[in-house]
Length: 593
Image (cartoon, rainbow, N blue to C red; front, side, top):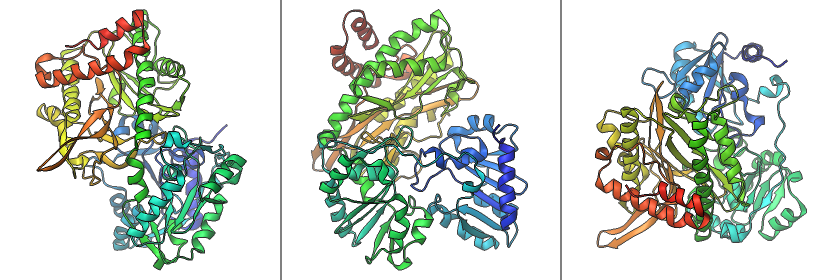
């Protein structure tokens, strides 16, 4: 029988006592600063039981605390109940930060430890200053969970796959040359590429090492005259090895990266402090490290070429067909009875699988009924799997990985009778979604400048949501992609032509309901005049938006016109895939209001 959470915490405390450690910070990341991590790096989940994608555990000799943001407060509260943990609501005005809490509860001379291989430079720098003032020492140790975690999963060993150039739209050799041009312009001689999606994009390789993210675990060092991929060579078939050679990429073992950094013989090496682990930085001579806040690869990857855009459009057709089939099944099945949240996920996956390009989910499906939808990142499980009834809302946030593109869509679906409050909340969220979708903005605009468009109708009602409004979407890659975002806090990365970005305002009322409406958009050219270039957002997502909850007087004529035009486009593009009763059904869903 496995250890309980309390026993796991006690084992870490024994480790700490032997080494004179007063507190241990367990972060959620891996050596590549990934959002989703391979099972072998889920140390925070192992020590706390909390499986959300964001969160940090802090263990002292007599306390255990879990910080996580507003997306996970309700879910985390349920998880840590009776485990000895205290939930710390990160972002709440009354909740101290991790550093503030440690400085208030530790003494001068105490040692705080963290695993330097999974903690970024930015994180450690943010801790070091306040700790120094208090006289607290920050120590970087080797991963203690190698010793404590019995049965820990091994490194993933999925095979690397070549993404053909007719899907990628550009060769790896060309991408590397573009990167070298950027490095020259930045006056540096090389770059350590740590992010798995950046490695995948640069090499045109894909894999299955991380759930939902089609990447391989690897590092790269790219200099002005060579490129080395650090990867377990058992993951590379002879075909992939030959391919890499043709693209000018040599191969070394995954663990060889540390010696390579130690032996790095160029004058300068670019690193991104928010994405580079501290162990990697400390492996290179200090005078050679050049820090830059933004990765040139991230910006190149975020701007999609025409082939990638065509791939997105093809993926959105497949996703739209699957969603319409699901909607057609859903309400009659709920009315008949016996449908649970997980059944929605299973049926949608079944409908998606009818398209030969479908390869899996891009994230865990959120099928949240009623009050469960108020938990922003709720995921049904066999233990928590609500029965759907012919009333209230189902929030369905889902995405697929296709061999031509990645999708991300949310629909809030009325299953039957709604309250006046539910209808008004839905209409305000929808109006915010449409206001952002209608945005026209000058070149040089960032997502923060547009965020208010999506929130304005909620703010007027004294309501708000605490998550971001939009994020980039990778091409056959991670569903969350930067550097650009649409959110309230300042995100200076500009919105550029060819960038994908989601449009997903929401509203969540604990114990009642949750609402979110999301389309994936693409930044397009709008006009050119004496005032410069102007851009707009065009929807890539093709799926009817439920019109039955709309309160007409709250929507407004301009928003109504946009919605009717959107539905006309959806009908035009999806109708060739349906006939008979199903075509009639699609026409009903897309009927103008």
